[in-house]
Length: 201
Image (cartoon, rainbow, N blue to C red; front, side, top):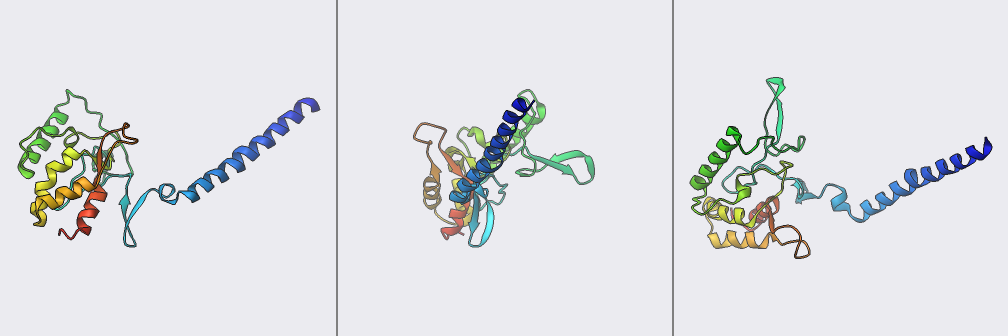
């Protein structure tokens, strides 16, 4: 019996040391070397935390660039058995279960397109991310095309030249990773903070 018990105890001790001590301390060391990502990639404005570069926010004022639509929800305060729309609710990351034949989805997209044409004076084709939600509902980025659509509205609301706002969009556009992976994107929070910091009030 001892010949079976000894290898089991050795293996238990070894795995306890590796998975219970070495692995957690290795992760702690990596976290200490990368404090930003380890703490949620928080974005600060002075001493105040204003968000995370990884989680989108629901900007609604004309003076700011708007994020793409979000399908997140929250518990209805009047009826705990139901949910209500709560865009960019970071407590409840979720996409939409509505399919392409859903009348509710079609009506929402049509309404969003009409609002874009009215508020942003859009006449060109509508960028897809301007009217579609992401899988998480918390996407922090928009396409450069959607950002450019909003330039005129933001410039007018802040009473500054469109060229100044367009230059900020260009400066805050990130390219493909390693030049080949993903798509060019604009982090909405970073862009709006750049707007506030540019003196374009």
